[in-house]
Image 1 (cartoon, rainbow, N blue to C red):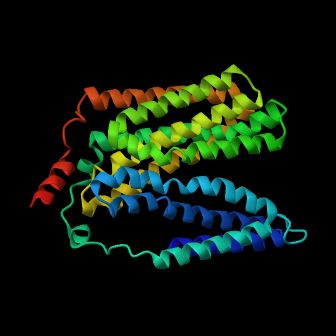
Image 2 (cartoon, one colour):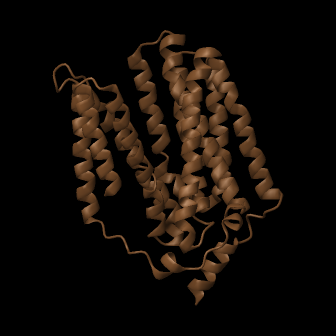
Image 3 (cartoon, one colour):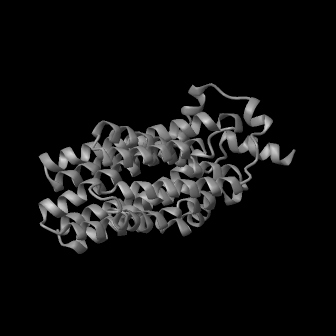
Amino acid sequence: MIGTGIGASGAAAAAVSIIYSNFALFCLSIFCLGILSGFTQLYRFTAADVVTKEFRTKAVSLVMVGGILAGFIGPSVASKAKDLIADAPFAGSYLFVILFHVLIVAILFMIRLPQPSVEEQTGETRPLKVIFSQPKFIVAVLTSMIGYGVMAMIMTATPLAMTEGSGHQFSDAAFVIQWHVVGMFAPSFFTGSLIHRFGAVPIIITGILLNLLCIGINFAGTDVYNYWFALFFLGMGWNFMFVAGTTMVTETYRPAEKAIVQGVNDFFVFGAAAFSSLLSGVVQTTLGWEAVNLSTIPLLGLAVIALLWYCYGFSNPKKLSMVEVESSSRTQK
């Protein structure tokens, strides 16, 4: 609710800043909306914490399904409310964002999440070096960072490549991005089941292959359908790597350690996404569309190396981790 309040304040400030043409206030308002995003990204961990271990992967995946609705509702509302206030384009859109936040608060009032247990508040914790040096944690964070970074790199540059590089209409770019969002979140209906059946590592590998398929399609041509298929597969690749990585992170901490582990994970993952988004525009305008795609291949190669190290190097994923052994012991007791 605190995060939603910050987001609502940001949306209100955005509307006011547009009406009075105050760019500094507009930047501050978007900063507040960014803070809200940091809160909402933890929803997936909340879902994982309150369900049984067997349903954990599906819970993380199903939380992501909301992105499908957002991909269609957001652009539609923004477009229809764009001219709601005369001489202040998009101010009306931000007013509707406030209404969305009011709806979120209403939903939160109906949710009864369990209070933090004694073990979560005062339980035994390990040194941070021990927690963050776990092979499973390293691989989970790294693959999520790479999955998000590659997605942000290519997705951010696509509208520029389509409109300025290939001469397509902005409506075509909007169509491609909309289906990219579908590709990002539609797999969430079954990603959790796939992880539960085959394990996180095979799903991450599948996500890497989907990203490589996206890059191959981008090199094959510059028609609208090339961008469409490429961005759709890019979204699916992101979903597989991100959901599987998140699932692995939930298996690396004790109850009293979850806050710091979840926070550190999201700091690195979304920091990588932000850096990639900034870098994408620079590479696109200076080196071109091909360079954007080529620059992501070494990152995917790094993810493959990390997985090989995890599977055949210093860690054996078939063995229960320390956290899983302790969890099983507590369950038996």
